[in-house]
Image 1 (cartoon, rainbow, N blue to C red):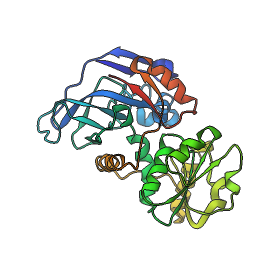
Image 2: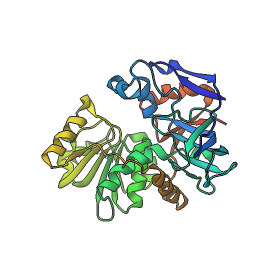
Image 3: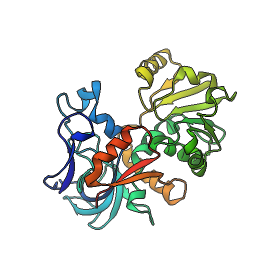
Image 4: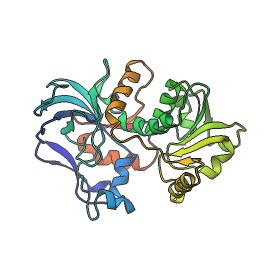
Length: 320
């Protein structure tokens, strides 16, 4: 099979499409013929992981095929699999430490992050799980729902655009902060108010929020704290400028104030989340925001584009 292989750290130039053996499903696993996947911020970060080499591999990546999101068809099943059969259309996420979906085939555990695709959904519209998974971690943890006011900074990326839609599906009032060129998109996915940060300082709008999510790691708690209610929470999906979010989250936890958090989904929750997202898609409460599409052979170009930090929603790789 063809796969995008990463054998060393570096620029997108290290991503090479090569022929490698097709995996064989173990007992309890499903072999998926991948039709679509994505290149995202996480993939780009793994090319130059810095201190995270301790997790991803000290000298070279342990995981040589990247790609979390997948949508495709079941090709074969391992012994004992009951939920899926060859020909089923499925979508979900690959395990973070195993080989991923930047390939023509990938194996996923039957009880992993996999579900039948929503009806009438194209493969390229179904590779939306990872961003939504990260976005939903804080929304659920802090009880975002009716009567809650939420501000999402960086509401145009995969995590931010997912957070807007999921927060609205929970009944919250959502303010999205984006650049000028993304204002119409943010409105189209349901934001109640959209602030163009190039035209006004969002931190001086004179409102207070229950929950602020920095979906891109480019603002800070200190800039946003005047926007928080007395019991409000600032959450970030990245370490933030100068890596400040991690020590702030630790201080917040140790002090018991929990004002700054880096929210994570509960271990083992991915399978239930994919089913949850499927229901949101089928109910018209969630849709893919697609920026660009590339063939697998041009995946290095997709990495280069995502690394600019200018993408909107997801960047799709059409594999099949």
